[in-house]
Image (cartoon, rainbow, N blue to C red):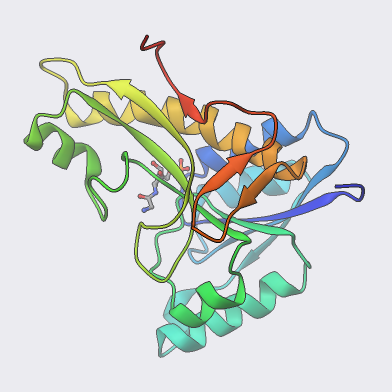
Length: 215
Ligand code: GAR
């Protein structure tokens, strides 16, 4: 990508993934986080972004009577920044098909599980209840289906006997930061390609799996 790659990041709360993305991209000449937006006016991540000099916007879902009208307002606000990519980073709203269509191929999410396992909420609780020995996170292109879509990268962490939900969440979150930061850099470098069969490749990258060396 010859020009600077423009990112808008959407958050709903703490924004630690947003911080990881901003930090990872700060080392690149060809990338700019042009705005951080939230559906929650009190999202802690907004203050962090402001301190970094990044434009922030709030589009509060409670000000709208339908998902469609909220998504339209959000899309309009995003479009004002003319982004190449919109990164959902702990954005806890279900988006309408219209929104997903509008940003198709440019809309990316992180989910705290190894999709297709454990979509939805309380993924760490689900993982512990199921007894899986490996858990992790997935960065994927967004489709109409919740927590579903072509996988760009995954990060795996072990589940230890006696883990609490909080301990497992901490381990996965640290992995999320690593994976999302790296994916943002790949996007900025124009290396991520989504193919017609739905698969993804990253130019020059042999493995998109993060975590302990398995073999
Ligand atoms: C992260 O664990 C992210 O994967 C999850 O919310 C958390 C946000 O933390 N997202 C989802 O569950 C979306 N389905 P953060 O605000 O510190 O980045």
